[in-house]
Length: 560
Ligand code: DMJ
Image (tube, rainbow, N blue to C red; front, side, top):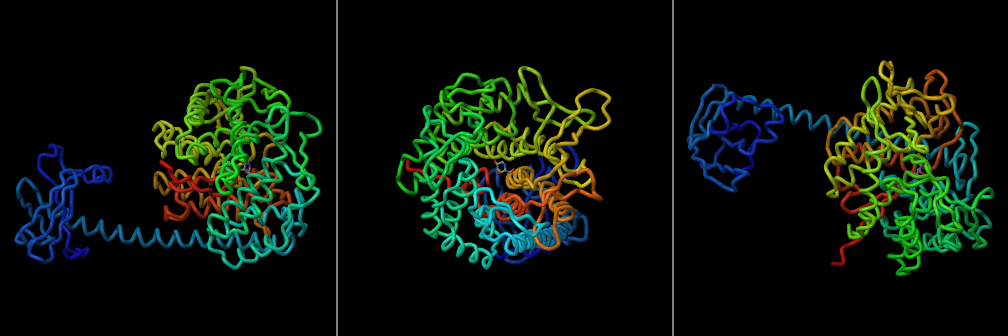
């Protein structure tokens, strides 16, 4: 069959579809299984295909002799051919072509804009902070946290995904020749796992280069001393040179999110090295947390004691700092392992029910759905920007077969997270907001003085990426583009780099903090790029699961 050209379509619909008049709304067109386009060109027979009944009919060419300018109705075996709609069909096609062209152009220009932003950030890092942890773009200097080139490692797979080959090769050379973990330095177990171990593992997968895997094994094995505790709940800090670990000076507690958000990485390390002790150590933590008293409908407290393995500071429940990625990793471990580990799924589903029951409220006057906090039975309408990972996680769950109402909630929360940006004078979200709940409020969102900073965090654009991938609703791309433009407007430093700011409410003086967090390159720009791309195979969500620092790790091949 000849491929039909645009000019020679008519549209046909079938009588008996209901007597309500002509309805050419987009929704109708999507739902209708009967409406098809037929070719008016030779050959003599044109093929008709009806999707609901897999029937292929040969359509006599005489019927194709229709002037598409006149309104003529043809009835053939119950099919009504309306040539006026044929003209509309042509216009629709032209419009669609135009739309496709302009959306391709806008895709390309947005992708290039993110590449340019990355290059600008990299310029600052390269000139003033090369091989150090974080750029201080205003003082043209750097700050050290672990002294391990954190930004460089966090950014490796971003460069690969963005196609920045030259920058990637320079960074790879540094990793190969300069990066050493044989250093007398204390690192935080969680942060170095998600940023360094996760970054090296994902770069190994994307590039196939075993140098990254060797480095991953090196840091992974050094971090294992954290698990030498009376309870097997790991300490927060490890000296990677000495192989010793300890809790923070003031407590023997670890943070719940930290000890339960290192699993994707150590499980993957175990799989690649065939050394199960990596997986066993992190699985033990999940097993213990699963059984612990002190949860509320699946919601966990924020601290856990490394001596007795019990929750401490009980009675406070949040989806924000110190608990957030516990929920994210329940779902993602289940996906990583091929959706077989039911306990993880059960804990996740129960927790989402717990969120709905205890933490979900609506604001006034506009009824934004938000996730607040609970402190000893008292509800607080406080929401960290960190909570904005949740729409993306809920959408990922729904995509993997979890209840459809998770997707509904994801969309509602996505709108709220977007509002946390647009309602600010800079169009950038603060670190923490408080929602108004009393009737008669004039605004939905309040921000306390101490909470007005923005650290270039990724969570909202991360969720926008998931929502766009799964719904294809372009509004999510447009929201992300607005946010991206505001990062450019208020946080870009002309000599190179981007800076976190102190005050999202003052567009005249947002008050730069002089720090570019490594997750701006590791996560924020990566998720923006993926959001603006229309290629669902660019890190397919059916093949990869992102760790909590946006490093994609493979979903394990099924062994069944
Ligand atoms: C990142 O290090 C990770 O996304 C973590 O889970 C939460 N905090 C930052 C980004 O905001």
